[in-house]
Image (cartoon, rainbow, N blue to C red; front, side, top):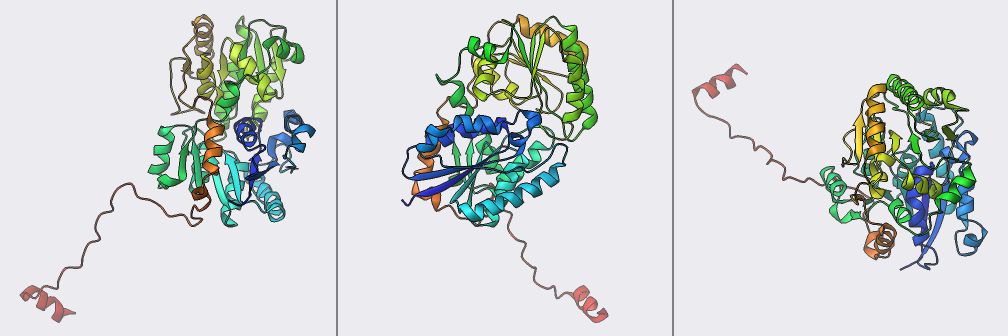
Length: 408
């Protein structure tokens, strides 16, 4: 098999956590060369300039082992609309692809940067691999995720449920590989720092705490403002300590950050634009609960058996298990859910999204030459036999038919 060039795209701290194990799985494998196109929130100082984390992860020692290509492209300024961010990303990525000439573009999830990668790849006849397609979620995320799936040629899903959903959407069974959620590889690894190390590094004085992580509902700005205000009021009214992390930079994030102004300087609360992925996972693993509307409360907390409180509609129709409490954005409901979560005994771990071996399955799939022969020309695959086409009936020759013919 000739050496294959694979381009990964990352626009947020969240999707970097998903693709990082996949990149590392290809290290020191002579069959592959990999590159990373870094953009989006990673390049914004307001959200912690997390491109630094990428360079720390893939530092000089790793560069010597083969990770030679990290390309940074600033696709937005704060407050720019999602459609312009999409257009900017397509422009910058298209130029980079012309230079790098990858054989495959790997994108994750439901961000506009991933949509840009899928569009550029498909229009340039480059294989597009989509990580964690077939998921359900609220707000505009679901529209973007399913759009990416329809453009992508290959799919690496978290479980059989999402695989079946892609088949329902007309995707080829041969192009879908169930590998689990890649960030669980990191969650269950021995590479996480100790809690005391994380607390010391970030200046977190609490022995017990909850993690708060709220994102905008882009399709309903009023809901975003209402939920942010209710969550902040409930946090201030409760006795708990909180580690608060900034939202993503979707439309409506300003509403959340405005409400967070009320939390600054409070003795029970620490606020951070971003945390290193491994540090975040350590804090999550030892938290009393997670509150907000992040997908981490649906996908990650169950792996650790940590309770989560999901506020509002952003995670509508997603996975449900006993550790997840769904509540409306009202202060009394949130306070009750906090008390229940704090008092809850430890839940059993749930591995609905994988068991920590995603990277191994991903590399095995890419090592199969048949994957690289996947047709670039996609065809919709019906899951039911179409109804037969009605056949034209023979012309009637009775008296009425002859009369109609005469009238004509």
